[in-house]
Length: 375
Image 1: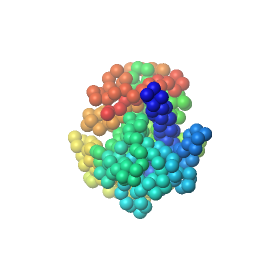
Image 2 (image 1 turned 90 degrees about the vertical axis):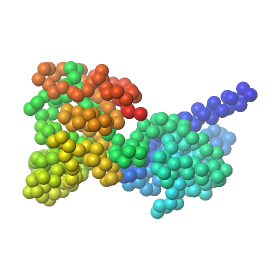
Image 3 (image 1 turned 60 degrees about the vertical axis):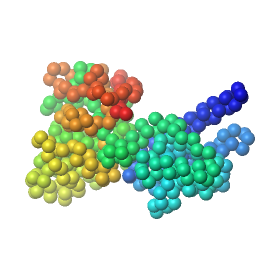
């Protein structure tokens, strides 16, 4: 009995180890797989000399092929009798290609270990059912919480028909996010800024208000060597279309898409000027003098966006919080104070809205980092 218990514990530890590796692999194409999530798959077999990875796959840029297809192609005949570790339940519906669950069956995989369940009604439970009906052993919910956190954008869009909203703020030691009339103020150091670039690289879009766009003239791109092409779409809440055509946002439009959320009453001449420059417009409804955010998020979800990183400013952050639309809060805090003339942050680490739980604390150089999520 003791040896059986030990053997089960060893297998569980092995499953967690390879699923953790599959989750790391899945981040490779985060933010680049269109309406599909970035899924990781690892195929492992043991011919007596210990477990060996024989195939790996991640959802391709654009969403196809799926991770299982990629891993099976790499493994070839070595997939027969292997264990497949998949970070999301294998799909069960026919599209341009057969379901991944059937592909795993046809390849002769003996065992499938899954992490997150897929809420898509075309898949939910059906992928695992296909595998079990073929006699394949299925183990569900291994590192499920970690997988759900990593794929929160896809899961949120599937369940709520809108993207996950990640509110990111950089605070000074005295709780300020900038100074009125001073443009961009350096609050955090280089290491923290690089972490922000990585966050951008994994998001589908970055969103700011027109106040931040006019005050800071930001580019809102990923400026890390080798990751420049991972810059997500930029979105500006600009009801009256005040964004200048000479702004960095417009001038970089040949490399990164730019959307402006504007009301129908905005100046048609301004709209036509920016449209000729390549700006894409999203028609918005007005609520209490501002953009109707729930409706905007529905439109962004319909465009295929699964995660939106809200970066500024205080008014926009307050509006998203007031509407209960924030799913994740990320706060960076620098060591220096700005002073009484600074712009107060709408939240800080001691004043997080109800319903959030702290996920992690980290440090980047001299800067603190904290993250909360809404379950």
